Length: 280
Image (cartoon, rainbow, N blue to C red; front, side):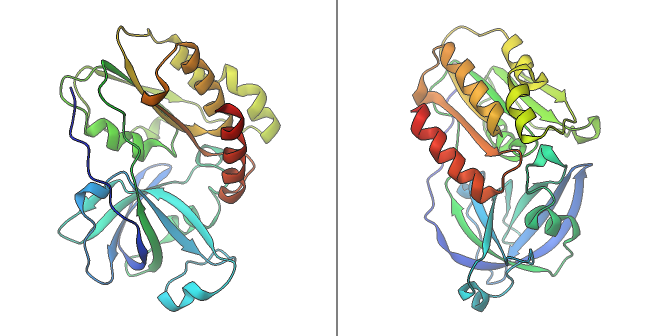
């Protein structure tokens, strides 16, 4: 059931990348193929790693290397969904939908992605390392919302054919369900929930969300699981609590928040750091 672990790749200096193509993958997800302007390829082992897209404070993309010296720039983090060897490019999927895509869903990165045209340029940092399911394991529990779906899909695709378990994915609408490659015995469960809570409501409603209720209703399979999850901050904390109650090994548990209601990515990073210090 074990699959080979890809080698980690060192981060590089930011490079200029150009939009080669843009596609509305589902009603709330935009897929861009970005190609390196210097023609240097991204190795296959960077799939599911992260990149940093760079923007000016006014929301416009940083397009040229000499613009990197300008102060007060924004960086937004996204997953490398795939590597295109023919184009020397990478595929990046952007969540576009309201709160399901985080407080930055109408911010610089998703706004840019929704309107990006072939030939548009942006400076990109990375790649950073991928977060893979820890091995060995007897079965798998995976979960995400729209923001974590690209990374979940990468993990799902590299599972061995005999892998068993669950992948639970929350999306805003039926139209956001997309075909995913998976082992035959991995159960794929889509939770449709077009929620728009305020920050206070999100904290109160997280324990009773459809997403968490679906996860808690699943049978805990025999043997040692490998757990991987990426979702909104309040749901992350509830899911982490639940998984710890099941006494899953922490070494084989990755549960992360990719966004937080009412907070920018920069603010969310501070919240994650404070939460990690308390949670241990």
